[in-house]
Length: 161
Image (cartoon, rainbow, N blue to C red; front, top):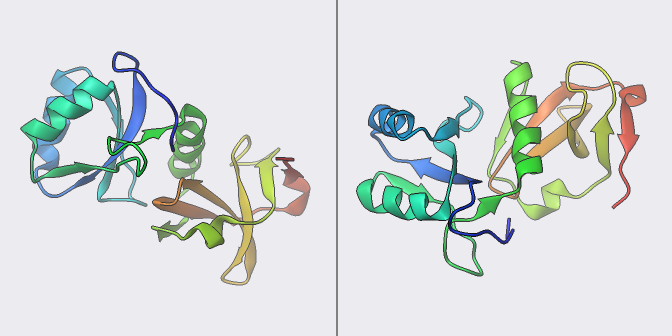
């Protein structure tokens, strides 16, 4: 999540909401800011905006909205577009996901794969055995992840790093 970014370019950022979600939704809509929420990470809102806008939003929503920070730079961490699109694809097409919440780095190690067919076609992640089945784990860095239902092995292709 340490992608370089400029102050006038839009990127995805993640923030934890502590109350006032309805007011925040209205504010973002009135400012023409795109956002994404999923029931699999209910306290997190993903906001597509500029770095400058995150600064304004942090000061206006002090105590109710906390952006996840880049540990090296100490400012809101930019989520790569590819990772965000992958996460939105998986969380928007199925009601059979297992929310994993905040996950450790060890949990995300394994064979990287791409789904080539079926409901999750195009999604990329790591294959892990969860609840007795091999499942695709899709994450945004280490702060949130979901696991899909079983995906047939013939629907998967290994991605070389």
